[in-house]
Every structure is written in structure tokens, then in C-alpha cells.
Length: 234
Image 1: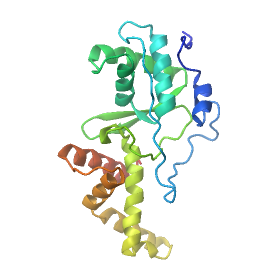
Image 2 (image 1 turned 180 degrees about the vertical axis):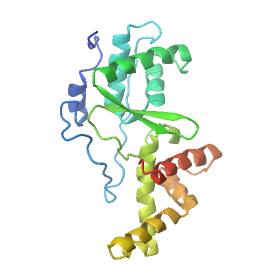
Image 3 (image 1 turned 90 degrees about the vertical axis):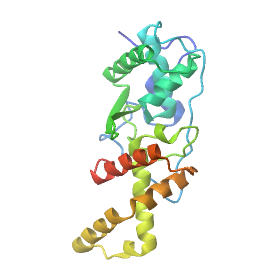
Image 4 (image 1 turned 180 degrees about the horizontal axis):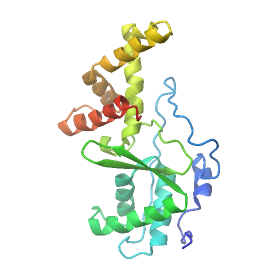
């Protein structure tokens, strides 16, 4: 079934991507763009989706639900599936994502992936898999300010990319980053990177997001991001 915008809805993924200033599905060349974080510029601003009057996903046609879900991903991607669903439910005038409401949104996501409009990255979140949604052909990781997100709504690979930068920053301050570039020095430097205090790294990330309390839940979430780096998945 063809996905068509509904009145007051969104454009196609390419048009929405053009409006958002990112590559659409037809713009990607040579596969996924390389990950990049400009330490001098710092994290990019976070653009939050704003909307209301969305149809109830439990009763609306799947094509309508898919249209609005695509709009959310166009605005906020890469965005966790959980946050995207919460934003949809909020836009529909509710506050809780029940299983009955989640099921049709997951079905709508399936439509978008089958049409090649949205890519889904599966990450190991420690306590379970985390799905990260983005327009097809766009970067898997974009390091951004926290914005209106909670820590747990930041994709794990986005945190992992920031952690990697913080780790290199701490290493540079200690002078270990001035090693000559050759094979042996590279091995030594990588070992030093891995030994960088996880506690200092996690605190540096919280500070970067303007957060203060290191709760048990926050520590576990940051540990999951650190694990992505150690596994070479970030």
C-alpha cells in the first residue's frame, strides 16, 4: 500500500529531509556517511519535533500513523524508537505509550522500513535492544546537545561517540596523546584509552549534558554506551 501524506501531515522523506537540511534516501552515495564530531564546534543543537492533533494510533489507518511517524523521524532522527513513540502519543493528546498503542506504531515503522524511507539501528542496551530510527541514507550518529531529551532518550551510539571524544580529551590532557604515530605507539595509546577512568568519563559526559546527579540508572546507561566502544560498535 502506498504511503500518502494526510491533510496537515508531512512530505515524503526526501522533501522532509530537504526541509531539515539532511540527506534524503535518494541522496546517499557510497553507503553510510562517515561519523564525525567536530570537537571545536561542539555538539550540534537538538531540534525537537513539535506537533499536536495527531490521530489515535489505535484507530487511525496505518498509513496515517506512518506519515506522522516519518515526520517525527525527519525532525529528530537519529531518535530512539521509544522517544519517537512517546512524541507521537503526546501529539495525539495522551501521555502513556500502552502496548495497544505501541503495536500499530511498530507496524507503521515496518511500513517505513520496507519502503526504504527509514533505517533502524539495533543497539545492545544492556537490559535490552535499543532501536534508533533515522531517515534512510543519513548518518547513524549525530552528536547533539541534550535539548529537551532525557539522558535515556539519547541514542547509545550518540553517547558512545561523545564518550570517545571525552576519552581522547582526557588522554590528551595527561600527555599520552603526544605519542609518535607508529605501530607500537598506537598499541600503547589504545591501551591507555581503554584504561581511562570510566568514572571520569561518565562524569565528563554528564557535565557535557548539564546534568548533575549520577543515579544508578544513569550509570548503567552510560556503562552500556562504554560497552559499545569497547566492542568496536560505536
